[in-house]
Image (cartoon, rainbow, N blue to C red; front, side, top):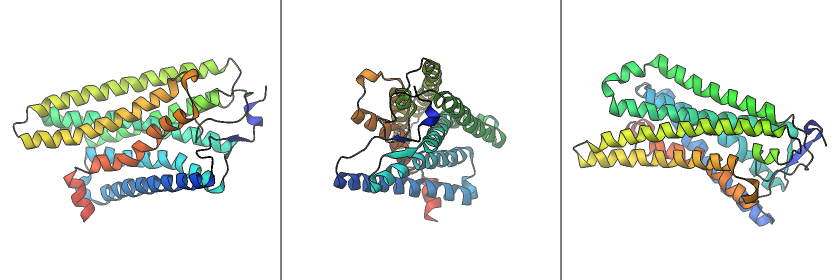
Length: 301
């Protein structure tokens, strides 16, 4: 039984078996990464530079763009580099760092998306109390709490996972370091402590998801009372894509961490991980800004 710290590096899941497919994977991930950089970068720059957008909704959107940039930058560039150099290696320290930051950004994003759903609920269902319930001080505290939750959750999981002794080799069935795949390499009963921590974390994420869904149900009920058919259509066209991306992000993330090893496969691991770690950060900027007239006007300036 080898101590995990004695493993110099891990071997990640190869995404392609031939050189041509490796280069195709590189180009595909490069396009996705550049789209995420461009979209989230434009949102961050526009909101920071336009004082008309210094409102709670755009403040939360600014933080979401930061989290998306961090999440996709933690996994995709390393995978592109491996494909370009035809290697699978990631150092032990690199794996620890990757796990820490992936969990930080994705955990904070769940908390922030919950806050954003509350923001939209108050704005649409309780507009007269909006300034009171979401003043600038409260918004800063809510955003800081989301980041703090991400850091705390990441610290707990990273500290529980990497001290475990690993005796099943060093091959990780994933294109980035993911805790469920690392736990498969352990043959110590101590990994059950981390499993219970994962269950608790998933339960909290599920509660956040329920809160988001309930908030959107209340929003849809309020929207249905709008007399203008055009107004209803605009509201649904804005809210439904938001809810769809949030649902994809949270459900695939939960499935990735809770599915039994008996029904997992390398190809399934890859698809699920891309759906929760790559797709949402790449499309959030498009979803949250495509039908936002204020943001599009500020971008055009």
